[in-house]
Length: 171
Image (cartoon, rainbow, N blue to C red; front, side):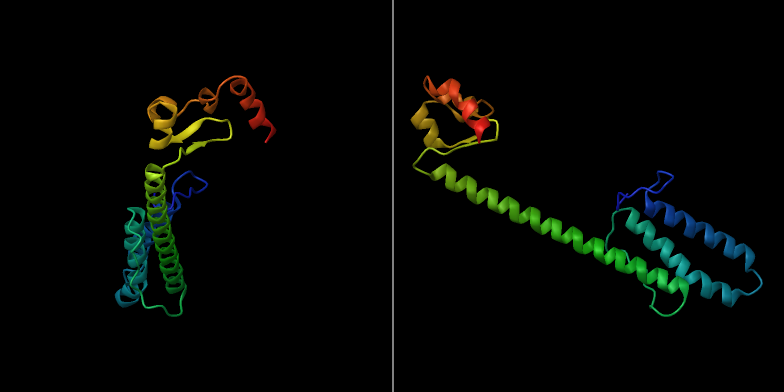
């Protein structure tokens, strides 16, 4: 589901809301056959909510009810739905913008590291090499593919080779 939030029954909440609204429409049509104008006035916001929740459940965060917000419980529900959809859409845009900024930052860093004249080696907290730039390849005589994923101590002479992991554990 679009929101990923589960109800108590295990169904996605958007699905549950859509099902409740659909059942409401069916019952209202059956119960209100005698007063057609009142039925239409009642069903208009319900059908709009059913349609909008169906769109949202399919991932369309631009889904809105299209209901003019005024007094009444169904109109309040429609306003709450529209506000929720707007919030989800803003969050999606913020995530997409953050992902793009991260990709651009990573690309700039890669370009800097690839063109640096000095060896640059990055390691994680256990000493495992995560990057090894071209200058490091020239200086150490290994290709990056041979070093990335290995412990950085492979590049060190004795006695530092065996002492390095203890040094990392201290810090």
